[in-house]
Length: 591
Image 1 (cartoon, rainbow, N blue to C red):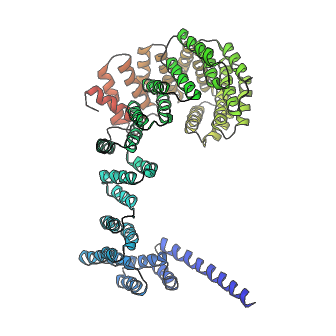
Image 2 (tube, rainbow, N blue to C red):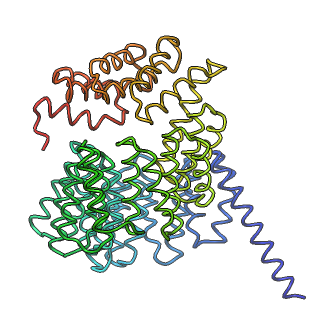
Image 3 (cartoon, rainbow, N blue to C red):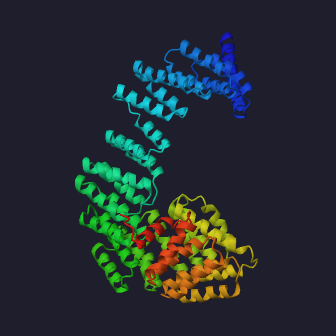
């Protein structure tokens, strides 16, 4: 019975202490320092080894400007318990709050000297300096400890302090020293260094890191420096330079081709087709297996399709691939792209549908099946067979709910409903996709949802939006001139409507696609004149600059609009690219 009573008493005491602690913290957070101190004082006395109670109690006394009381508490703790010399820092800080810097420094030095006598105190001394934002002293503490204990490694803490102090070069060098000690620190170092660099190759921090890495590579050519240079160039979207580093790694270590394939894929997604082509040519020259070979050849074929190679040439390449590798589960990706080529490039959708239906007869896994069904539904939308398309999309979405393929299918359901003018159902699907694990799908869903929401407010019958959706569908079906004419109906009948700028922009893109460059120029200029602060204004500036540069050969105008993005739209996603191109046109040496 006594044993049970003892257990009950202990539980009650712990619960009471927890309540006291919670109440004390509440007082502290609300700035009621007298009440907080009254509670923390007994908590500290009962739990002298609990540094949290001690620190909060000291903080309360300091906030109340009861510096002598705080000093007494700290001194008693140092004299009573062993290895508490790190608290000299708190005494020093107590004096610093009283504007007595010489007295403060005296105690800071005492804390540092304690490391000489007891090196194992080094971490807690450094951490206490750091917690009090005494960063120079913290650096001294960590460095001294590492000198006294060769196995100690506080480079991570030192790097963080350099970052906080804004000493970027020292910070980068410290992270690189960590990697030199042990290359398993490479991912962690990338993560933290990544917070200080941008996608702008001319950013000061990017230039510092590049300079350090090149110097280290010259003095000590280890793979880690190549890997970091490759990573830096990838952040800056300089894919050719990243490829050079990965080639060096491959040749030195005979490593796998995975990183080069990844660069090729990312370059392709970012429309850097020449860099992507170089990646996959290198892969083919150093081929390792059939899957890799097929991946490389498929990407090279897709690059030809994106860069407007003739349909005859592309058809011949597909037939050569099928002749060499057959139509098997290994070539599912090639068969899917071939079906798209037939439908969207050669305008032979029925043949594309047949290719996909034949591919679905091959024994394949559920993910390949979902991928093929999605492509099949895309072609059915292209031919206007919406209901059949929705059946396939829904099957994929149900079978692969939590996979990117299933989420893509859900987006396609929403998009198809939008094409049909069923905006409510489209939005119900889009709302689910806001939290998609795929950032690309999530962004597409947000964009389409915003388009519907913004342009349905002033038009209860949604006639303008339905007309725009019809034009969107016609563009998807490669009926470009019909889409242009449909958008013109909106521009004639809905001046001042929120959808006007969307219609102008969509039409401008189609004008470019059909080589009507002067008309595209006029549309972009209209968007800017309607509202220079509109969400599409920076897009209009950028595409107008691109049009002047690449199609209308007006360098001065291109410079003018790139410069406007730099100065008038500093948060634009086009800022970095606009700055690079402006500097290049101005003749700056950006290498």
